[in-house]
Every structure is written in structure tokens, then in C-alpha cells.
Image 1 (cartoon, one colour):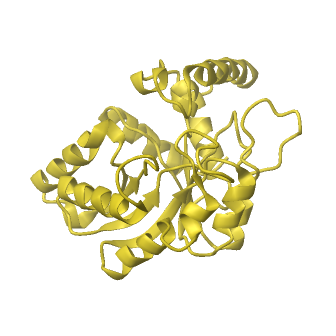
Image 2 (cartoon, one colour):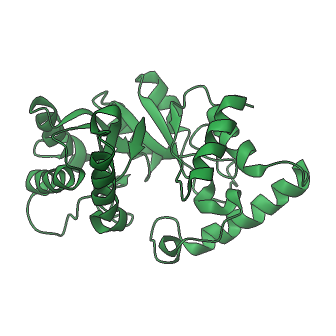
Length: 265
């Protein structure tokens, strides 16, 4: 009963389709909706006006008056634009920043909880997480890059997310794992059209993850369902509250439920 979407998914089409379907099924009050705001700091308007416009449009597309969770979709770094679309700690925490507006939207009843995307620089993320003001984070965590949930060696080949899940645990935050299947590489899927153009998880990363997935399959044996192992691996982390998985057809839903029923590894 938890559905994750965002204003940028399909340029709003994800929210529109979801809203229409929930109303067709008379299921609006049976689910919890989570959506996101991505700010363009060189775009029109200050932070507050951008957030309000994004949330207003999201609620309209979803056909609801509130969501359960509103999350910041930008990365967080020491300085603004240190990474693509990243915000600084000050952009988030200081007067006139994201937190101030998110909390006001909470008071107005437009969202029940507020959260973050834990992508960016670990030190900056720790500072924002350490504020204790956010209820959740969504963070990349999977078998080929578990660095958000454990310490890794200095020579680790990919982005080191700095074991930020431990920081979240100290703040008693909910942790939602994203990229559970490494953009499809751990599910034996071809790269999506999004992977061919995204600045955040590009095609060359998918190709490296695909090679690692092939190595894991060889190590575990061809009889092992790597999709099952990958999901149960994520759910085995004690601080992870849920795994956000994309579904393309009903069988994917049935598979995920079967993996969940099998329990953590």
C-alpha cells in the first residue's frame, strides 16, 4: 500500500497516470503516496515558490489533497552544483531553505512526513541528516554497491555513500532503498531509455554493474534467481525500512511478494 513517484518521472506522467488509476479503482484512500520535489536553483523563483508550485502540481496530477511523504529529490553537497542539480547544506537547512518550506507544508497538512534523497557528498549528507528534522531518506543500496550501509575499502571502485544509513539509524529515520536492482543490471534487464540520458546513474555505470551481476551469477550458480537474492539482500539490512522496486507488469509484483515472503537472507 506504499507507492513512490516523483514530479520528474515522465515529466509528471507518472503522477497523472497513478492518480487516474487510483481514482478509477476507488483506491485513493487505500494507499500511501510518496512524491518528490527537484529544485532548479538557476530556474525561476526562490526555493519556497519552486517547492510550492511543484507540490501544487503534484497534488493536482495525483488528484489528492495531501501525500504521506514529500521528499527532496536533489543531491546534497558542500556547495551548490558541486554535482548535477545538487543543493548545498545551507540551501536545505538555513532560513528560506528547503526545510523551512517543507515544515510549513507539513503544518498546512499537505504532507504528513518529509524526507531526503541521500545522494551527494557523505559529509554534507551527514550534516543534513544530523539536523534530526527529516523522517526518511531514500538511498542507493544494492549488492554491487552496498556503501550506503557499510564501510568499504579506500580503493572501492564506485561512488562511496559513506555508510550514511548508520547516521540515519542514530536519528531513527526510515530508510528506503533505491536502485535495488542497480538500474536493472541485477534483474537481467536491458538499460532503460532513462539510463541512456541520466546524469545521475549513467550508461557506463550500468555496464559495469552488468559485468558484476554476471560475476555474481557465476559465483552463486546459474540455478539461483539473482533478482530474488538481490531483493532479499537489501531487506536483510536491519536499518532498511523498505525497498523501492519498479514494476513493469503484474508478474514483477508477484515475484517481489514471493521474495518478500521468503524473508531476509
